[in-house]
Image (cartoon, rainbow, N blue to C red; front, side, top):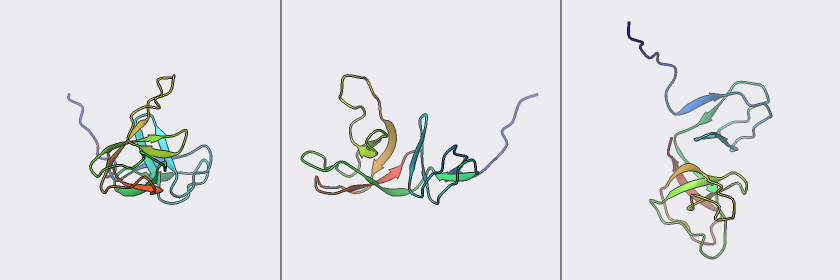
Length: 119
């Protein structure tokens, strides 16, 4: 007998039960899965993370930090920013988690970048 899949939920959000409270807008990385809490989720309480949609994410500011529209971006969990670089560029081979694709350009001085989640 072949195993068949059972539908669980749509793909716009996934269930998530954090061990510590999660604030609305907080980015949560679970392996290769990146989600955004659209509402606060208390510790040890079932909530949901958006894994599809367009969000403004913080980005580094300063010379060379602008990002063109259509650029693949990654989440830097240590600095809590979106970046066009796939890794830290430091001595350790720290890889960032794929976040999505920018839907509009942002300048060096901009504090945020608009990204379509790529889950």
